Image 1 (cartoon, helix red, strand yellow):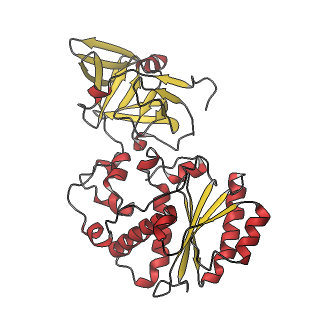
Image 2 (cartoon, rainbow, N blue to C red):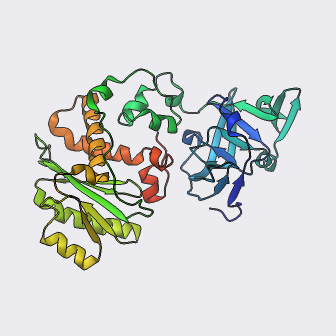
Length: 366
C-alpha cells in the first residue's frame, strides 16, 4: 500500500438505498475518501495488493479492500479513467469519491435534478440527483461481459454455481445448464470438525482419488489432492500407484514451505495405508508437525479433502462432457478443474479466490 493513502476509508451511505439501484449504476458520493469498485473487469490492469479498511458504519463491521488500481468508466462513448480505485467485491454498488474527482481537477455542474462531470470544459459523465445522491450509469468495457449470451463465461470457468458468476459481475443465466444437471450431484456438505485455520499451512488436508479407469494418457491411475484449509488452495499430484504418495507429498511440502517461508503445522489425512506408515511417521517426527488421522470408514470426517475431491470431480465431469473428451484425458480435465477452482471467488471467504489468499496477488479473468 502506498504510504500517502489513509489506511481507513470512510463512507456512511445507507445500505437500504443501494438495494434499489440497478447493477450497473454508480454513486458519486462526497463522504467517500476513495473510489470503491465491486467489478474486477472495470480495472485496466492487474491490481496491487492492499489492506485498506473501509468503515461501513453498520453492524457488519469494516470491509477490506483486496487491491488497488485504475478503472475505466464508459458512458455515452466517453471514457473516464479513475486512478487509485479500491477493489471491494462485496460492495453492492460502486462508489466514486467526489473528493478524489476534485483532486483530478474535474468539476461538477448541477441543475435541478441532474448533474454533469466536466473536464476542461467538456462533459465526461452525467446523471441524476436522487435522495441527495449523484447517481450515474456505466458500461463494462469488455465485449464478453456485455454480450447477451453469458454462457461462454459459465463454460470457460468450468460450470461454477450462480454465486461465483455473480461475484465476478457476470449476469447469471436463469435457464438450467444441461451439463451441470447431468454432471453434478447435490449431496450435503461433509462435516468439518476442525478449528478454523487463520494462517496458511496451519492445517493441510490430503486425500487420494483412484484408481481411475481407464488410466490417463500419461499412464496415471490416481491423483493426490493437497488442500490448504485457510486459503482452500489446491495442489494436485498425479500418480501411477499409491506408493508414490509419500515422495510427491515431500516434494509438495518442500516447495510450499519455501514459497510461503513458513512450515507445516498440522497434516490431516485418513487412515489409509498410503498415509499411515513408517515414512510418514518419521517425517512428522523429524519436522515437528502434527499428523491428524480421521477414524476409518468415515470419509465425511475428512471434511476439506473429501469436499475438495467432490468438487474437483464434478467440475472435471462438466469439462469432459462440454468438450466431449475421451475418457483417458481425465488428467488434463482434473488439472484444469483444480486451476479454475483456485482462481474462482469463494463465497465462504468473502469472494476472495484461493489463489489470492495463497499468493496475495490478484489476477483478471480475460
